[in-house]
Length: 251
Length: 258
Image (cartoon, rainbow over all chains, first blue to last red; front, side, top):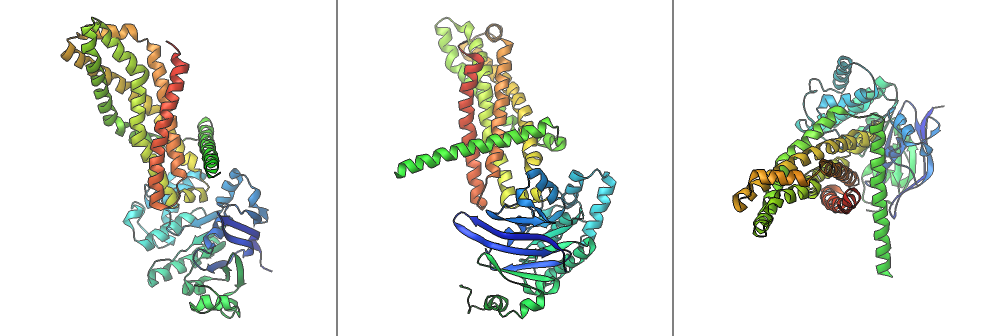
């Protein structure tokens, strides 16, 4: 039986009066790529923030490696976050730092490695995401796809146990989308860890996912392998996958 | 009932704001006491927030000293007390005008810059990125700005005091023919050195106010570009009001009736 890396247990989240998650439960399998799909604003990105403790649920619990992170103090959460990489939707690179400095930041702050070694690791990590020789350039000088990959490099440079990707291919052309999808698969293999990807891009999801979870109206309405989801009899899933206006999902 | 609701909500918001800002200050102090300081970032901020404010602080101080002298010197000579003008200018500059004016000018320039920068980092997820890397935004961003202003605002105030007094001396000499020697003698006899130090202590407090309010407003930014604008305005207005309030309280405590 597959090991569970993280578990959302009966989680409720609300933003003001809006209920985003209601009694949501989900297991994230260790060593696999789990993709979360759903409508815009359904709360997919919130799941990622729950998994690394950036957001606390209003009720319910979140377990990572069996430990309840909802009761952790901030100092414990900081230790936890060092084991989880996070690639943000718009990369969230620090615009006052060069690409090299961005990627080096977690190593400089969390390790006592000498500068030469950090430089070597940064070069290797950037190379592993297909970005060689951009260390001295600034985020504003790179294309959208390159910035995304630099964000990936920063997320994985400390060899985390898991990496969370928030909409990694949104707004990019099909070729770059393919490159990034391939990069996510390769990085997961290289780290031998877990990946959770929030995305709308079905082609990309079919290419990389081991498991897919569909979020609808605050709950997981379908969960399974790519084949299971594609063959799901659930009309909500089928309407979403086909992009149809007709069906139970209100437009 | 609606009015009471509004008053109640407003009061709650004020206390929540004060609590949040105090918590940010306490967090920052914890990092400073634990010597978890990023020195390079702090010196960069000292340059950006302090050195780059120098020209505007000196200009406003120069003209304030000059206008103060212009208004008082001719009158003083008419009443036969021209020998007191130097003392009046130095006294008011070192105790009140120097620290206050420098703080207000720096709050306008620097408080806005801090709030805008941190606010932009919030809306572009850079603050969340720091947290997701296991780094504290307080240590990485707030502490360097706080330390920079604690050091730089008193230094700016010293220069502002000097320029303001020199400007006053020049105008007193040109318009009221008060000699430089008389002006300096009066200033030295009226202004004890401890008053200058107390004025600089005020600057330290004002520096803390500007850094913490700017940072807090920035970190509380919500809602994109409009939110950044709101945070920036809020930082400047709140910091200036607090500077006036704390100036009164500090003058009362430090100088009493003297």
